[in-house]
Image: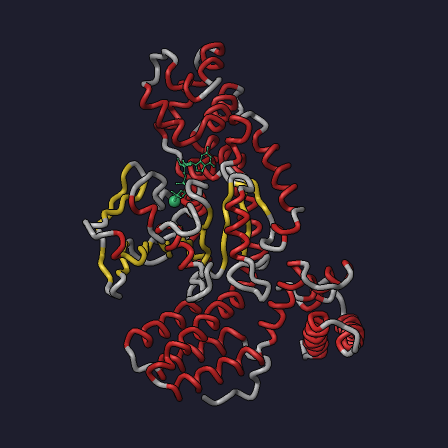
Amino acid sequence: MSQPPSAGVERTDVQVRRLADLAASLATDPALRAEAASLGERLDGPLRVAFAGRVKAGKSTLLNALVGARLAPTDAGECTRLVTIYRDGIGYGVVALMRDGTRRALDFRRQSGALDIDIGGLPLPSIERLEVTWPSSALRAMTLIDTPGLASLNDENSLRTRGFLALDGGRPSEADAVIYLMRHLHRTDAQFLESFLDRSLGPVSPLNAVAVLSRADEIGAARPDAMQSAARIAERYRNDEQLSSLCATVVPLAGLLAETGHTLREDEAAALRTLAASDTEVLQRMLTSVDRFVQEPYDLLAREEREALLARLGLFGVRLATAELHAGRATTATDLSRLLVNASGVAALRRVLAEHFLPRARVLQARAVLTALRDLARRLRAADESAAAQLEREIERTEAGAHEFAELRLAHLAATGALPVSQEEQREIERLTRPASPAQRAGLTDDASADQLAGVAAAGVERWRTKASDPLADPLTAEAASIAVRSYEALFLAARAPR
Ligand SMILES: Nc1nc2c(ncn2[C@@H]2O[C@H](COP(=O)(O)OP(=O)(O)OP(=O)(O)O)[C@@H](O)[C@H]2O)c(=O)[nH]1
Ligand SMILES: [Mg+2]
């Protein structure tokens, strides 16, 4: 493979794409070749974001909320025990990827708005994963991956998730980023999060992981201030040293409210209006608890309808919707949809994804694919030692030359608090490694002049060069400082480049 003259400035994902092509051309085994080709395609596709967390944490519900459609099953069906990838596409389709490498198209239908997949009698252990193709603008920027709940450290369903996310080492993670859901910080959450921990930027880092305090509406028996309480708890978690070294932030969220808000039907809005128009005393009595709501004698809505409302909104949602309807602040199904989505907190999660994950998508994907290619090279070795050695050499060269990877590592080190530098320097590194304009990375505004940018960049080079060459600096600080030097040098060049 010829090295382009501008390798230092060539986009890292383009270099990694070339490595995937090289791997595909070197592998003679059809399975390895197909794997290399699909790694290349992974770079062309959107960021792959996986939902992980304990059983019934609300993963599938939240996935549906982000897509705005009830695609992922939230019942106890067998599909909840499979890793399922939801991706944008031209047509609708569901395929089972079998352990033996074959693909089987599966039947599916929409049942009351929810996707119902028929796995056609295939034994679960024979299925590697499901792939759902669904035309959806929400899936254009991110492919979303539902994983089975982590129950214990080694039950069968957890093992599927652990394998997919590479929690136990071994094969590399198939996700570029992770949304980790927890209802409260349980001892096993800490264990799972701990197994994510990899100081060298592994599957999970503050750059590609966010924690969600899920089912937040249920806090304190769905009290009206449940979401405020959740916000306080999330704030506490955010300040937790261990947690903040593992994820970008902690977002309190009621996924069910968002899912239902995005998919509310007219008949459900009508049922809520009926309730809201009831005698205030009757309504209040019904809304004291889930049991009362279902069991109270009430002719206008059958028990099943009330149960269905609870399943779709939870007690908090029913209380909120009826209160707003009653007060005249909401009338139509559209009003109710907006109300539920706003109350859910999903907007904050969308913001985190847009600000933290998506701007780095290209580099995160390249990083994940490079790791996967290294694993592939290892397996190639058994069949063809010299081909494997060639691939490994090229991988090494790409990794060593790719300043974007070095910056990613620097950003990771700063975000995890692993660097023994002052708070001011940590903030500077975070700013410098942010996916933003050169001026913003230098701490200037976009209207700064080229000379201003060059001045700040030159001073940055000086400052960090001194630190990098300090014989007393510890190795991590020295490494970080040399990366910072190169970053400032790049900013200097950007300032001097013709505009
Ligand atoms: N009240 C409330 N209930 C929720 C929320 N999110 C999910 N649920 C309910 O919790 C149950 C589990 O939700 P799922 O989305 O299936 O959870 P999961 O993590 O995907 O579960 P597994 O895949 O089985 O591990 C369902 O009955 C949901 O309706 C929420 O934000 N609020
Ligand atoms: Mg699920």
